[in-house]
Amino acid sequence: MKTHTAFGWATQVVVLDEKGALERVIAAHDVGRAINPQQCEAQVEGSVHMGLGYALTEELPCKDGMPVTFRLRDIGVLRAQHMPAVDVMNYVLGGGSFSSRITKVVRTDNGLAYSTSSSMSGGALYPGTFAAFCQTKNPTVVFASQLMLDLIEGMRAGDVSQADLDFARTARVEAFPATFGSMSQTLSNFAQLEYYKRPLDYYDTLRAKYEKLTLADIKKAAQKWLRPEKMVIMVAGNIDECKAGADKMLPNQATIDAMAAKFGGRTMDGLAKKYGDGTVNVVTLK
Image (cartoon, rainbow, N blue to C red; front, side):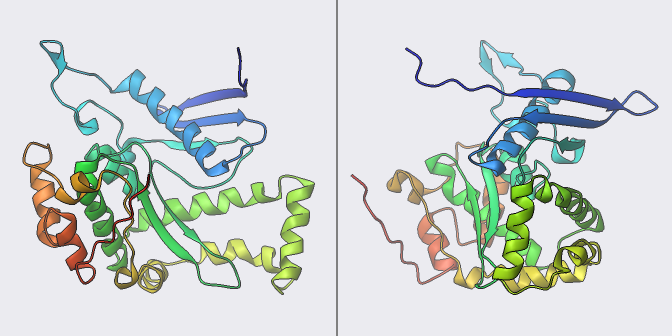
């Protein structure tokens, strides 16, 4: 008995440079109506990333029938800096790129999670909320949280290169026309101008505002909106295993030690003392 059926249409073009090396991948996917556009785009990018890895770099060395390593970085998975520009020409919008630092550090370098993301919610009439997220094993919850905290602090300190800025700015500017891809989108965008009391030339000047951004602007925004002192860390899982933190049998011990030294130790209680009064509130779900 079938409970559901779904399909889509897709085509991909791989562009090589004059030396025959991979330069660019264009992925065009007609997925119909995407319930979660951001996740849909991330899945398309992920499929391209996975396919390139299978074809060009990956291997799984085994000994006596068992893998010799369980870390993504050791089996040839493409790193973020090796991922070519991916033009996702499907009918969705949003972020979720494999070039993000959280994906590179938490997923690729340390093999702690498959799903990682960050977002900034909010609107024109009220402040937004920044959130960083990952799915990981209970014993590595504290370690993964510390890695994300370290990246957040790096952003506040201005740890952003010109290449980082250029890449992000281009991605945002080039995606702008797609927000007017249909009559309904166009009507909605101009209706929002009236609702938020914005000038009629708002969209005419928006791209220019992105193009004028500087590294100083990014640092200023990070210091304003990324507020560790107001942060709430929420964990869902086996609370005893999560609170215990990483044990000595896990890989990446040097990185675990470095994060523990910076963020209050290996345990959840230590992390709570670093970013609060040490209280860990537990809600039991039945």
